[in-house]
Image (cartoon, rainbow, N blue to C red; front, side, top):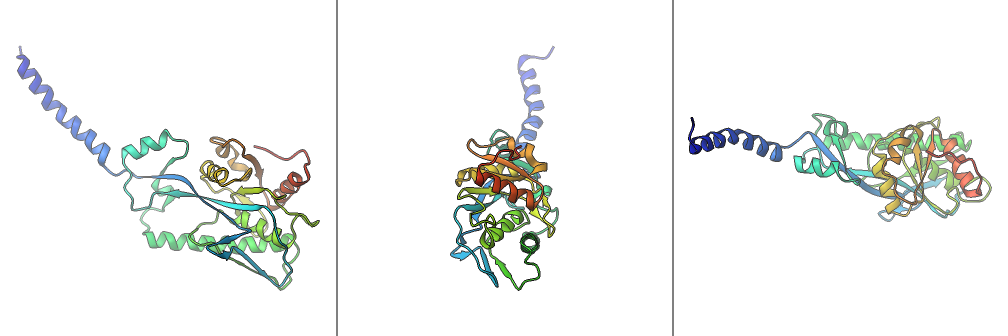
Length: 263
């Protein structure tokens, strides 16, 4: 039989690898990114003292209300995320733990990621301009639209850019504001033909929107479930699939009509 001292020594020796594994798990970097609600910006207003939307070649109107594009913020591609960060993120409604490769393409440097996001933003702005001018039947006119939004990349502001251009040029089509004077937020990609696409991170974006005063949130219909998972009180979700469906929903809200789609 082993003496008590011998048994304790044996247990201590066996415990050393376990302790080492636990220490490695706690302190070793993990292949995740932690995201949280990011900034929002009113596309009808200014960003860093510069109008987000500038239009020449056609008369514009003074708008009321806000159209706020939304973002998420994630730990950088070079940031170390540890087990404690992951566990904390799992138990918080204002955090999301995502595979790093789903946020940042594997192997890309910070500069390459910034270049990619900037290119996506430019493509989104071009598509937003074309979609808005097509919708207003101004594609063949000499209308120039300039979109400026500093420190934001990616394509997810496309829908809000498009709605902002329409509001500045035409409003609701009868002299009123597309927003009805509300603070409307949303997200979604846009194509030149007005198709709205999914973007990801919508549950965090709804939180950013409500934090900054929005009462209505336009969400790609395919992401209704995600958007409603942590929906802040006082924020109404309106699912959209096309530019026309978004404009129609805002027009119905402004005029107090029933039958507005919901998630």
